[in-house]
Image 1: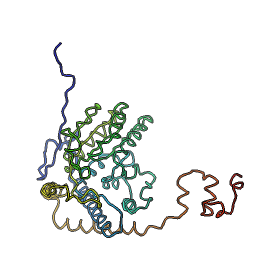
Image 2: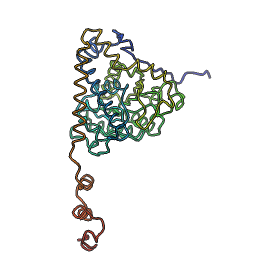
Image 3: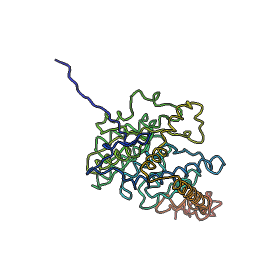
Length: 374
């Protein structure tokens, strides 16, 4: 019997705006021949990106001055989070983040100072407001993808036209949770988009050492899932790929995988020193691909941006950052009784006594076991 091909596939790479701000006029077209993003939208997203970068930089300074705990900078990866976040419907779709998607979370309604509270150790930073559809930041690597799959499954069971989009790094695809989530999502065809921010480093381990595949995107092929690789520093490409995947999922087309090739310009966190394992020349090369520099070049070439507007934007971003810091540091201290109020719908009698007396021992509470049983 002759040998025949049982399976054949390819992974496409999408780039619309390159690092020199040259736009592919053919690829930029969306439905009806219109640009996927208008000039006004690009300008607004660029301004938003600047505000997010300013907040990122002040958070770094707060940690260095001892006023905030360990912090992971988002610097250099803003286009990935913003492009995907802008493609999702605010108030409808659900975001399930890792910890470098601040921009997307803020875009979908999370008060900006909540991120600061989280890294300051205040649990109220994880108390997502009513009507804001997103999970808190996820520090364990890879666990959030299972959550996103479950949320998407619920959407499908309820016949709701909603989509869950989950973010993670290249290192997370080496975790078992990733494969379980991908397999379940594909087998049950749930409306979930898996968005990988491939920033080339799983803390200090380069992508080439943690996997032997040429791309991260091809891992989705094993699960029969539509997959693509995009320039993660290209706002146009990220938005277009994310929009198509989200709307395909909303229409019942099942899950998709997107690999956004980007780079973290800072350390893994403020507890890390990337100089010990990264070549300075590599970092310098990626600085030139900074998504903010790229968009600024594009807008300037279009004649809708100049240095005066940049100065105004920088000041506005600085003022906004100071406002967010003030909100975080001036928040009212939590009540001691909060430890009792957010676990049970109805507090058990023994805990009700502890709450009232602030004592755990019956001698301190002034009651005996027989009283607790009444």
